Image (cartoon, rainbow, N blue to C red; front, top):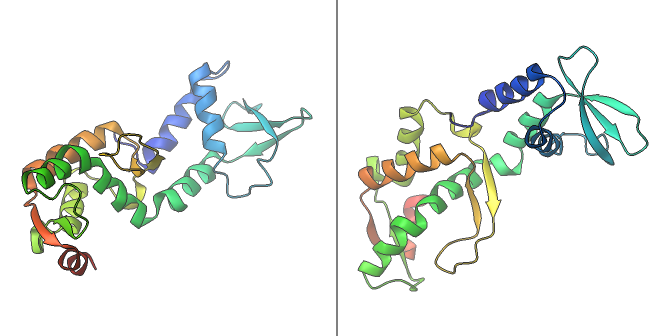
Length: 197
């Protein structure tokens, strides 16, 4: 299943519906989610996440053992509308996903592996990068703004540090779609940047 705001909320609801005790995996997942709460003071010194007394929501437990309610939907919304889900970071994630398998080989093929004066472009119109991303999202019934991205630091110098797609299924589908649908071209940096404005 592709990761969107709805699927993330459904996943958390599924964990809540299973009840306690939470599995270690589910517990760690919930602890990661609550870190995105829009009020940083609310989650300061949180040590645990629990099921509320009604069994239909979450509580957070502080180091002094006091508890408070928390909205997981607010956490998910913040995660998706905060920096990690900003449009430019999502576009960066789509670019980074294809870099090693498709862009680097194309550069090598044209003798421009480390030449920063040349970029690998996509052309204009239906072949532009923006158009490809939009078509991919439409074909897979995705809203681009709901896509979750994560920041990774990659050691291999052929790879790139930055944002990547969080969902492996989306990543695989995007790589296949891009490989079949793109029309890569070598461009000067100026030509490429003009087309991406």
